[in-house]
Image (tube, rainbow, N blue to C red; front, side):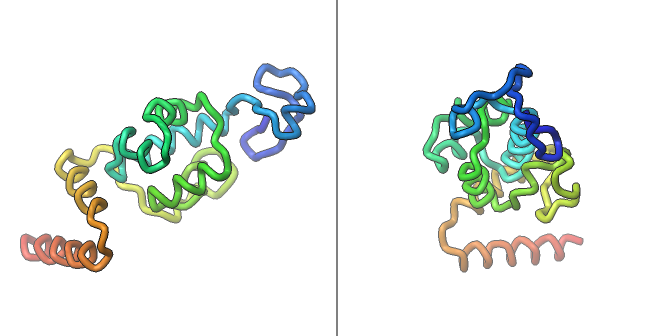
Length: 150
C-alpha cells in the first residue's frame, strides 16, 4: 500500500502482500492517495465551474466514473491526472494537496467552493468561448467593469 509519502510497503489495501499481477501492471484497488486526489478533484472541479457531466464528456467517460474518482473508489492513472490537470488548468500537485507528497503550496489559485451560482455560470460561459482572443477581451471588460464599480 502507498503511504502518504509515496513509499510502497508491498501490501494491498487489505494488508495482504501484493501478487505479481498487482506489481507488474495488474489492477490493485484504490489507495488512500486516490481518496485524497478524488476529494481535491471535486474541490477543483467545482471551483472551475465544471459539472460532473461536463468533465466526464471532456474526459470521454461517464459521469458515474467521475463520481467514483471523486469518491476515491477507483484508482487515478498517471495519464488521467495529466489529462485532468490540462482540462481544469491546474498543476498535478494540486490534486495531491494534503497528502504530504508535495509542499502544500498551490501553484494554481483555486477559487473557494462557495462561489455564487452566477460566478460559476459566468466561468462556464467563459470556458465555452473557444477563441482565446475573445476570452481575453471578455476578461478585460469584466476587470474594467469591476474597477468602475469600486
